[in-house]
Length: 76
Image (cartoon, rainbow, N blue to C red):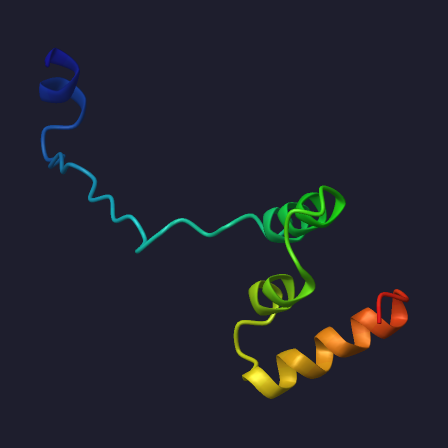
């Protein structure tokens, strides 16, 4: 208090305003790691994995990708 009166009498103290964003961004490696673990455990089929990795694709595009994956891995 004494420092303020002697050295900075005209200083106006303001509390900072902190604004947080709308949400937390997800770690970009968490989804692929989760899908890899599900695949290794044979706990999920190919279709949900494609839908999770490519949520913007329609059903036909997802099915085409699933078919390609199954052919490439020798499962079809």
